[in-house]
Length: 214
Image (cartoon, rainbow, N blue to C red):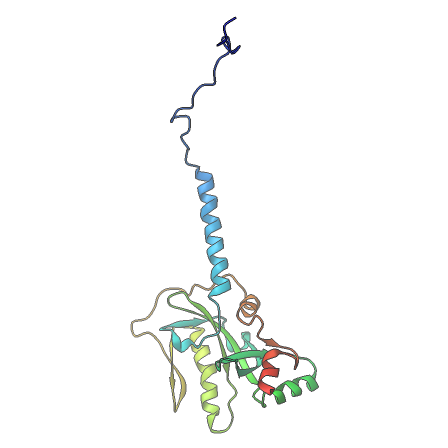
């Protein structure tokens, strides 16, 4: 008996794989699915990280959502300072008059009426203008300028600037903009939830209210 006999003399060895056998073919169906997933992911990430409250005067030209002023939500809001001394705007919502008065008192009677006006810039940035529009006395005209700008911006591209004597002033582009505003598919409710997450005051136990009162 041959000591080198392994008992495999009559068996075929596995065929060695060649480079040709390992070649990966391009999957067109998977590529289309990947592109769609990427678009959905980009839209989701933009919705979660890019939508926040900002004055439209920070952008060159903007368009507001909605066909008229009455379509926009009007709520109570308040501007308070955070621990770093920065101004932060909050929505105030409660059905109980006593609770509302307590919140207002603890906020130094700063609770006012605000309009929630979503808009998009000519570069595609989507934001929300959370603006106090009911100013009283000699400042009433400036408060009304908020509504005037929004109504103009719902129909045309406009640029909004602040002028000390007149309030917010809108003008259309000098050469016009023919592009259509690219609003996201998120509805107004979704935009508000994204923008004001943890910034909706429903009772006097909200941290921002207690911090202002302390």
